[in-house]
Length: 269
Image 1: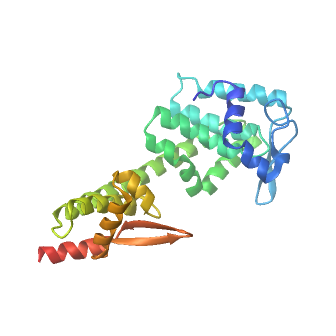
Image 2: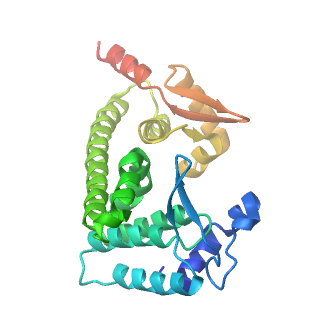
Image 3: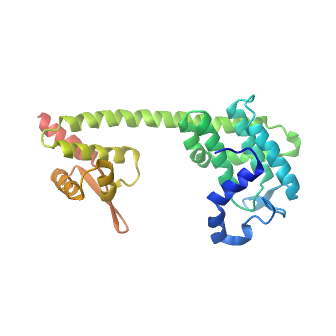
């Protein structure tokens, strides 16, 4: 995927957001050659804090310039992503969806050029630091700032760094737990080889997932038959080694860490 010209931005918008925005309010769809024709206002707490660039000819011109910066490899990738991120929001080429497109492009470039964690975490980092993120735009937009982007770039990078360090710590703690419980599962004498395999999958879902894993996905992940999975789950259920989480018509499974500890301790004694 490349973002070299305004048409690439519009193509991404069509693939990613067009149908969704059409369902929400088709009046918010682009009505120009590529972008919007009319003025758009950006609001915060009911107050208009910014007007997007007009007319469309200028939008196209400014998007071109922003993309030139984004693709200028003489600039450090973190700096050019931060500058592009600000400029795209300032230009505001669409009536709706600008933030989602901006975050996707920034995430994609970071993912493609740096550690994958930074790219994956950008949207969550913005959500976790939303007030600081919006204040960075507001301060940078102030006419007294005279178009100096230093403050926004600095705050944007601080948000990324904070998110990365938290994610690194989170991953380390989860890896420690994974190793600890994998060793306990390996040493369990009351559990069969196939049961250990499925319990390890359920452990991963418990440590790194939200709901767990469905029976169908257990079949796909393990390459075992549905009948075999049912037998294994019944075997694990004797020791209550997993929890069932119901969501609508579906049931999801994840390891029960407390019961793994309990069975392991009984075996050790």
